[in-house]
Image (cartoon, rainbow, N blue to C red; front, top):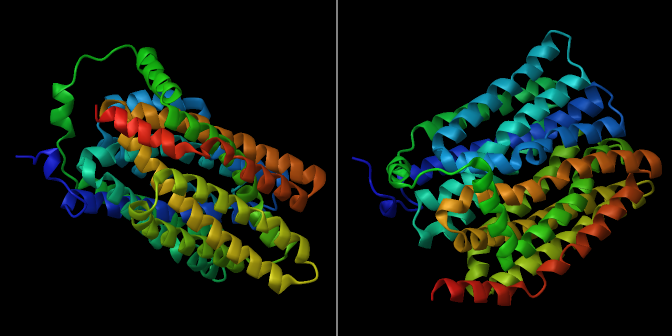
Length: 422
């Protein structure tokens, strides 16, 4: 007989398997994030605009199906949804080395593969964030989120550097085999989880029209003061920060003239910082207010985003110093961003009714991730018109301004929790 939800914890076998599956999924995503742009730049000699299109292709699905995906995920069982998404990602990514070995790999293939992977990632990510409060009791949600974020970062700490090292021995398309394998193992971990979501679903009320359920999720996000501010801030933050991340491979490989291995080292510094930030988040939440961590984390991350154009500007005469600044920027930016992310995700989950979690997450991702394809296209176009470094300055200054909506959010969080307890 399946154990009730209340018996699950962050040390239960079910959570441990979710933990393992999500870590491997994040590892695969990191490999793809390095492998795909390197293939585009070094193997297919893509232009700045084409690199921007590739970045947009991987996230455009959040704009296209982000809202209905949340309503669908709330209707479906979360674990089978994640399993199917992991399996599809594995099979689709396998087509990259297959096409390359056949001598037929072209840039439009990368566009198509990135779009399909992005499509199923919408469902995986919405289901994943909605599954945590189902698998662990309310008191453990914050710890579970922190543990998932920390180990995801730890799993990917060596990933980019290892990828860069492997790129000295094998081609970037072959590297994508590792990406595909990680998704397949993630599928196996998820398959072994047992939960009681099916019993809860049988006890749920009748379904309404899809549009009505989507509207309910959108209205909740619009009317909840804390979540509304977070969405505005995150939407613009992703717009500007993604301009920088889209151009990072071009900055490292072309502007500064470093190797793919060094690109991996720079990204690894970000992963180490992210692991540290996620690990520190629970302790910081015990000692500081959530509002302070949200605003402070976002401001700190934005400040270090602005170090990237500084590194690009001085790298012509001081290449070593520019490289060191890039590594510092990635470390500190990601550490601050993870403190912010663990905190804001836990706050969102604590303020949202469980039956709305999927639609709440999808509504937020529609806005927040929907800005990313626009950002990628904008980064590619602007950098081709005015150069990589000036475009990075636009991304950095814009990122700093996006902290304005979350300044003073702490009092809204306290008021919302007080309202829940009445």
